[in-house]
Length: 261
Ligand SMILES: CC(C)(COP(=O)(O)OP(=O)(O)OC[C@H]1O[C@@H](n2cnc3c(N)ncnc32)[C@H](O)[C@@H]1OP(=O)(O)O)[C@@H](O)C(=O)NCCC(=O)NCCS
Image 1 (cartoon, rainbow, N blue to C red):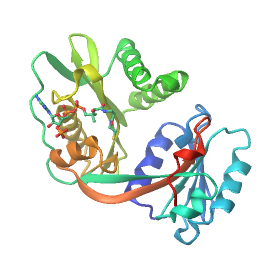
Image 2 (image 1 turned 180 degrees about the vertical axis):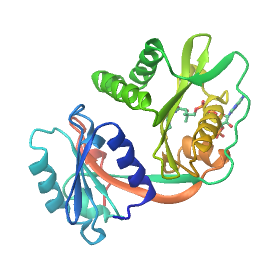
Image 3 (image 1 turned 30 degrees about the horizontal axis):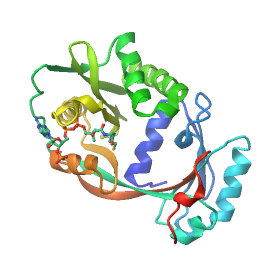
């Protein structure tokens, strides 16, 4: 099945982390038993572009596959019609898939910081804490995410880069290589106290060099449309490839967030 680059690399990352993917003629069912509250690790992915607006049908399929889930997450291979999904109170997200085939800039790291791959248990604990500070509602979830990353990194397919102020982690990102000439960036984050000092810009370049040295030609990164991150990635050398479409509803979020169709 020839999936768009964004979803293809999402699924490759999930597979590396132990997720299972069941294939059906018009959809996939992705499950992450180690992290059942991971919305985008437990979802249905619609692979038939002609049915991406069958909101009622796909929602029923999700509920059949994940009867105990509080969330609803459905990935779509093609652009949906807003109204079809808003009618079932599902929120539509669009993200830009960007790719670098050429050079990725690597400005020198700012004075007072060092960059290196995460290696020790304390490095990984700091990584968990960095994300928990940014996303406080996801405490236990982030611990499970780190456990998966440690396991995948130990197998060599994933490297997690950090920028440290002394021994304190200030910024991080990961890069996963799939052995097919493609690598995918993950989870770019800088602590608010350390932003706008070029830390992400430096780590983007360091990870690119690392992946290129291991044979990756296409470097893929995803950013919500019209965000600071997207602008930063474009400035570093990434260019638009495609759009990732997904629809979701998360527990506790009122449907009024959904814009009028
Ligand atoms: C997006 C994010 C990762 C950027 O991290 P960062 O380390 O601040 O990134 P940089 O410092 O490399 O670049 C940020 C900006 O500062 C500018 N900058 C870099 N060095 C600078 C310096 N020494 N002085 C002033 N500005 C500088 C960059 O040019 C860039 O400018 P832009 O906003 O016009 O594009 C960070 O804001 C963040 O963690 N946001 C929340 C999570 C998020 O959105 N992650 C991305 C998901 S796709």
